[in-house]
Length: 305
Picture (cartoon, rainbow, N blue to C red):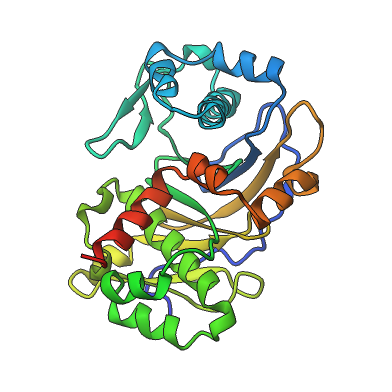
């Protein structure tokens, strides 16, 4: 699918999820990625809620379904808890600003070390990425079988991406679509442009598979120098999920931390999630579809018009 652009060095180390230290040290050439379960016992959920701002609580109250509210609270509370480990501040002391397309960032009052971050959550799981002085984006998606992925790709992906998708064996095509989607979404989130950047104006093409070579080739025909400024790679998350990371400049050392809730069990060992993911009821699917799902479904609705 083509070589990595000149000057765009890639980190080829395999990512594994380990228990994080209480105070992780983030070097200037490192990227830390956190994987977290959003299902928490009531006492811990209340503790996380108590750290949120009034604005975050207002956003939580807008969710119609209780599970959506609780997972939003958990995701935002864990974001604060994670960032506070890098800063000499309590989780409730952090303040955020938001870009034109809603991308959050720490205010200068909260962080003087140019800590950059991004997050993505989907159906009980959250992914966070943290670095210093580099724009960063991360995306996580549940691989769904109820979406017209090929039609969406044909209409909105680039010709090269469509050709790669069509060359994928049929039984692997749904997973391949979500791999491409998370790669594209992570880049868009890193730039902060939102979907104002047309999806067919840039290519994201995995060099191989996640297990063998997780790097992703980014190309922008109208601006190859811009493409050379970014590093992209696929990430392991959990069974039936796709995930990807985009970071400005060189991707140095990558570390994976797994947050544990009060149950003491990492997510992949909790069987109730695999049962829910395999056969979700109609109302369960509706409750847990959030931002990324809505974007995909919006594209799906457009192809029917």
